[in-house]
Image 1: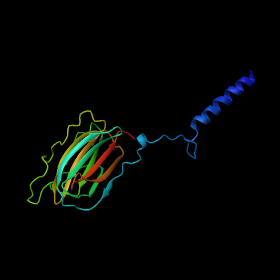
Image 2: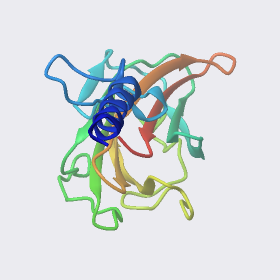
Image 3: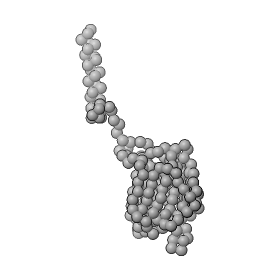
Image 4: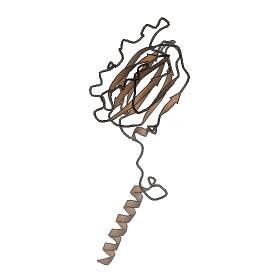
Length: 187
């Protein structure tokens, strides 16, 4: 009976070691694989220079692992600064308050205007206006236009929680360019 108990205990220990093989750290604690392989992080991201091509469109989309906001420009643009925190309107400095459902607020500063050479708006949004219907999006809650002033355009984006995000700068379609913001559904 002692041998049977000892063998059973040994089998349980060995099964635990085999199940945890390859997924332990040097300290011996188990680590989980990143969600959908996402390793982006939630620290502020900034790049590029001030551009002159105006913003023409903002659109959103749902993907399997993240929600996406696309900012499209009528020419080459590569400048942005995006991070978590309070967001204010351009020129006036009034707080923007997008719907977050108790989550977090992403501050988006695009280094390009939302107006043309004659200072006519190139997007159909007014300052403080909600840009997209985000009903049933897993992560995005609201996108609010914060205006454009001296070549900078601002948006406040409400999200479910402080989650990892990435920013891409893409060429096209045609002569246009895009700054793309992806926010993961979870860590």
